[in-house]
Length: 271
View 1 (cartoon, rainbow, N blue to C red):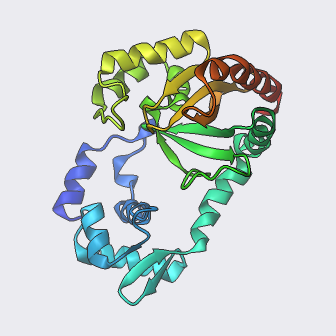
View 2 (cartoon, helix red, strand yellow):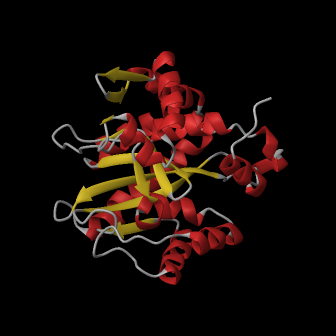
């Protein structure tokens, strides 16, 4: 059996896995391969070997093996010296969306809300410090660059994220806040952890979150939790608008009521 290099061996000694799994069963090679895939973004669509190594913080030799494997499997394509993702990576997302009841139900929910409010509507789930969109619908005349299924939003500074964070137990919420490296996305972003906690607890008690210009200086949005039949929060749904296109009173009035009604109607479908 091949030996781990000293860095990987040290990480294995420090690693604690969920569900009490044995750290020795963790695959360093698989983790490196996934980190290489995740290095490609809308801003980094094409990268050389050196670019990828710099982004993931690994040696070129290690990254070369991951890149070669991913090209062979069809998830990356090599054009000259530039690597780029292929359409095959969508298989990974489509498997989740097809198997998840939330993903299946959420798209029709967003389309319904978009028709009713004439606003862009999204459904998201929590992934670490991000709210990740699993469904999206927008009015045909509105173009939102980059915002679609798989788009990641900063959970702490968005209505979707705060609703999802509000569903966490207090001890887990506090633990996440303790280790949070707080980043301000706009001049309006909440800058203090204690204030963030208060916003999230308010979202919990009110049953919704309304956030103005904290993640994007041009946007405000309102979100409510999506609960399945037993009351467990499994996602959040929002409606968002450009500042000035829809006022705050409308967002927290008629738009919020439509979100709440749609969430209630959807609960029996989420199993």
